[in-house]
Image 1: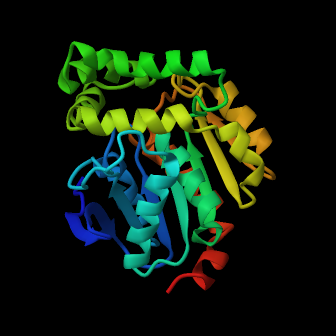
Image 2: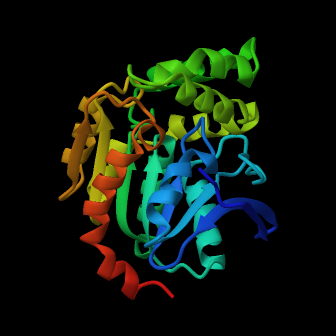
Image 3: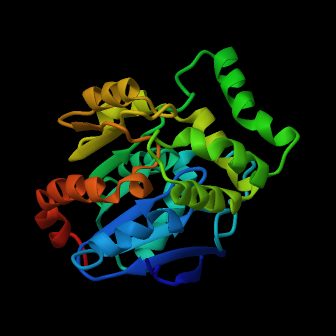
Length: 277
């Protein structure tokens, strides 16, 4: 599977990197905390024949410069992504976010509603923002604790299998470990801060756009019950759950993800075409 090359540009004084392939309505892909633009390798092959597929490297990931704040919020990432899309001439797009990428996708839809013509939240995290302060602090500390005594490669070795469904292949596990090992600890820490402040359940009622929430039946990171609760809180959202899938559907079962997105995106392409130049 051939990935499109990484592109870079300096936007608002900071470098951002991304991969892009295809023409037509923009399909923007936002990776999770342990990923990068390579996480969407199969989706370029699946969707670039119909869409302009854009997968960024979030600030601090790949060739993208980190955000200057030690504790950025989801809105900071959303503004960076919006600046990239504006530079690319994309006024509106279908937005797909996985894990913490779903939080960034929701923040973008809330901050600049016209940018998102549809929203797909794949294995969405809820964030710790709705917790009591002591619980929130404990959850944040738990996410950061592994890096007090190990590097990212060691973390990936321990963590990768836990985020995948039970039927994963050795080849998939090796791919996930490699992608996760490329993440820097400072970039990971910054997205943990996003997790600590975000409150997807509180944001849900304001997501007044076509939304698809996808859960993995074997996902221990974003369990089906939390994904269903989020979908129920978003006006008119559709909820789908796939048995045997862990926290990484775009790599675990790209064929089933393609079928789900094909159905959902096709219903909302006309609005996106009218708003893209």
